[in-house]
Structures are given as C-alpha cells and as structure tokens.
Length: 286
Ligand SMILES: NC(=O)c1ccc[n+]([C@@H]2O[C@H](COP(=O)([O-])OP(=O)(O)OC[C@H]3O[C@@H](n4cnc5c(N)ncnc54)[C@H](OP(=O)(O)O)[C@@H]3O)[C@@H](O)[C@H]2O)c1
Image (cartoon, helix red, strand yellow):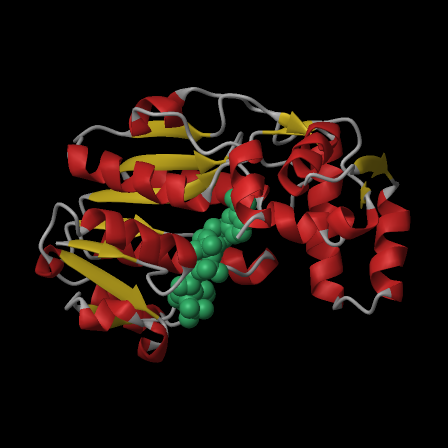
C-alpha cells in the first residue's frame, strides 16, 4: 500500500486525485492529522489513517503495513519542522517501509538563506542514511503564490517587491501533483532525484509584464529593499509570521536560490508546464 501524508493539504489532495485516475481507492492510503479536513477523500472511499508528525506512536501505528510513503513536508518551519521530519523518517525506517517519495526543494543546501531549505537538506540526508530507496522531488516556488505577492499591483499599476533583479522557476502546484503521481505510477525501484522547476525562469520585471498582459493594464515592477518591504507589511498590519516568511523568501530570491530552469517537469508531464503568463491570465480573468 502507498500512504500519502499531508493528504488534507493542497498538494496531497491533488496528487491523490491524479493517482485515482489509475489506482483503486483501496490502493491509496491518506494520512491526515484531522479527519474533518479530509473533504472529498472520504466520499471517494480513500482509506484514512490519522496521525500527527509530532506524535511518534501515531506514526508507528499508521505506517504498519505500508510499502511506499509519499512524505509531504510539513507546513511549519524551524525546530518544529526538524523534529517532525525526523519522526517521520525514523518511524518509516522502523516500520520497514521500502520506498520514500519526499517533497523537497530546489538545490537543497545546509547554508541556504531560504528558511525551509536547510531542513529539506537535512531530511534528504536522514532519508539517505536509513538505506531506504527514495525519490526526491526538488520543487521550485509555487506559481500559486504569485497573486499574493502581487497584492494590489494590478489595481495600483505598481508591483512593489523585494525580489531584486533575480529570477525564479515558478511551478504550478497542480503540475507538481501530476508529476509526482506520474513518477509514482512508474514504480521505479531505484533512488531518483527530480528537479521540479519551470523550463524558463522569470524575474519580477517579467512577472509585471505578464500581469500587464493578464489584466490588460500597465503594471510596473518597483524593486524595494527587504527592510522597506518588512516595514510596509508591518504598517499594513500583516501578521508577523507572514512578514517573516515573505521577507525571507525575498532575501533568498535576491540570492538567486530559485533561479533553476529545468526541463525535467516538462519531460515527466510530456507537455509544457503551466507558465507565469498562462496562470496569471487565467487567474485575473476568472
Ligand atoms: N515550493 C513552495 O513554494 C512551497 C510553498 C508552500 C509550502 N510548501 C511546502 O510544500 C508542502 C505541501 O504544500 P501544500 O500547498 O499542500 O501545503 P498545505 O496545503 O498547507 O498542506 C500541508 C499539509 O501538511 C499537513 N501537516 C502539517 N503539519 C502536520 C503535522 N504536524 N502532522 C501531520 N500532518 C501535518 C497539513 O495537515 P492539516 O490539514 O491538518 O493542517 C496539510 O495536509 C507544505 O507543507 C510545505 O512544506 C512549498
């Protein structure tokens, strides 16, 4: 049996939807922290297993009899993330799971600026150390984040962001889900690492051009400093954790940590991944 963690989240739900086009519901298990959030999984008869990354015995219980695990990284950061990921890897090893699919990040390294990246590096290392075969999906930034980053840029005509001159290979979460499902269905036995990025990277100047086309209104990118971005968000009473994550992402962008064009996603999907222009056009014309 294949168990999918984070099954109540966007990526988990979407991956299960793609898998169910080829597998029977009973071949797929959905690990959820809160069954009330399982939504359509329940009506689609996908067996639910309840556990929390924080609760080691709950992981031991749900990993019993699992052959393959799609481990979707947690939504928290810092020490909590380290503890939770280490629980999952240890419990998977103890349960004798044969293969771990893990959602990582582009170019994982121990000293990256982006807050989540060193944790992904450590988790990949921990998985390798178990001796379990693995598939790492090293995902670039979600394209789905762009409307939040753009804020009121379309209305005001100005896209203020601390992305500097650097570029990112934005990928649509649905495309990542489809790629994960396709790779799982290949049933590869060996360890593999896939960089899941766009064939072409975009600067925020390019994003502003795409926004202009999508909304049929001029939008200009105005690069600002991270300090200025932090202050503006604070003045707008944005919650502190959101400010921290957003400014950290901007700092990492300025260092080029997401500038990884790659053709692997295109090759897995056997079509062009959804690009920035197409996504924004759909988003602003809904
Ligand atoms: N590449 C990017 O740009 C990017 C952006 C954002 C996030 N991410 C990463 O990608 C992951 C998947 O993305 P997503 O959009 O699907 O995120 P999401 O919608 O927030 O889903 C996260 C999933 O993780 C589960 N989870 C969180 N803490 C847990 C815990 N302690 N025990 C068990 N399950 C727990 C959540 O369960 P609940 O429903 O119970 O909360 C949810 O199902 C995120 O968790 C994050 O690590 C990547």
